[in-house]
Length: 121
Image 1 (cartoon, rainbow, N blue to C red):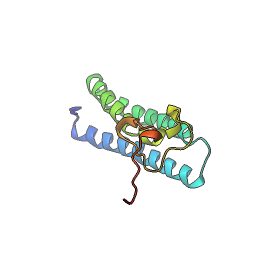
Image 2 (image 1 turned 90 degrees about the vertical axis):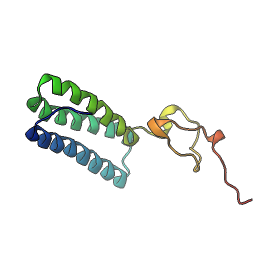
Image 3 (image 1 turned 90 degrees about the horizontal axis):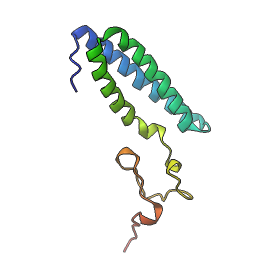
C-alpha cells in the first residue's frame, strides 16, 4: 500500500504506527500477566485510544489524499490486531473450546464437535 509520503512523513508515520503497536502490545501483556477480568473489552478500549493518538499525529502531517490512503492502512492494521481483541467465547460457543482446535485467519473458529482428534493408533 503506497501512501506516497516524503522522507520526513515516513519517519513520523513509522513512529506513530510503532508507538501504536508497542503500546498495545505492552498493555495486552500487562493485562495477561495480571489476569485482569474482561481483557477483550479493555483491549478494545486501549486499541481505540492508541489509534486515536496515531490518527492525531498523522492528521497533522499528511494531506487529505495521503490521509485517505492512511485510513485504508489503518483499517488493515486494526483488523490485524483483532486476534488480541476478540475472545473465543464471542461467537457463542458452548463450553470450552477443545484444546486441539486452533484459530484461523480473521477469527474463524471451528466448532468443538468438528475438531480433529489425534489418537495414538
